[in-house]
Amino acid sequence: MEELERLRALTEADRWIERVIAQREHLPELEELSTLEAELRSLLGALNEVQASAEPLRERYVAAQATSAKLAARVGELERALATSTGSPRDLAAMQRELEQVRERAAAAEDEELNVMLELEPLDETIAAIKERAQPGVARRGELQAALGDLRATLDEEIAALRETRADLAHALDPSWRQRYDAALKRSGVSGAAFVDAGRCDGCRIALSPLDYDRFTHLAEGVVMDCPECGRMLLR
Ligand SMILES: [Zn+2]
Image (cartoon, rainbow, N blue to C red; front, side, top):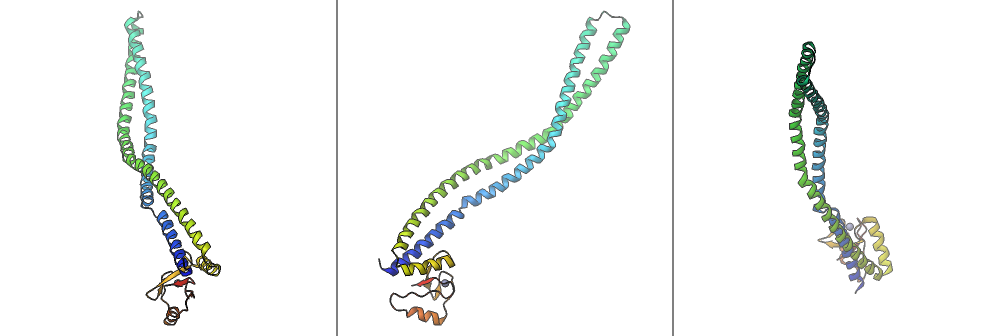
């Protein structure tokens, strides 16, 4: 391969590596994933809020249930005692009064239980609805994470192979050119050389002055000038 050809090939190789790296950074799956994660975070926020309002109601419900069960048991006890009692009419009347009081308290506890249950119901429905809405998103997130892992692995392999080719090209290049190329690459990034296209350096996209362009078009065979703007070696 001719020296200038090698320089062109090295420039193309470095640009190709840059494109693949950019592709790796801007995968459409990555964008979808970040949008999806923002949605899931907002759903989680809503879920936590509803759960926080439901929590004290749930505690009240459990307490009301326990009270109501305890009072129902007491009603049963008193009813059995009354049915089998051999006490005086006064004792029986006292038991009857207690039974009525306990029945009233049991009814009040049942009302509380029912009211809290009714208050909880819409909150539980909202919780279930939020979870249902999040479910396909969570599944999609898993798919995207797996797809991104595969894509990145493939692109990393490609980048590694391209870097190997690039190293071979750089190694074969004339040492003085390689030095100039590497210095320009370090300074300007992407590649150490650029092509002149319609009077412009396609590395920095700045047009050469008429004087510089004239110099460029009259260069002696095997001589390469640098872009006055970005310092990249100029190729045709
Ligand atoms: Zn330039």
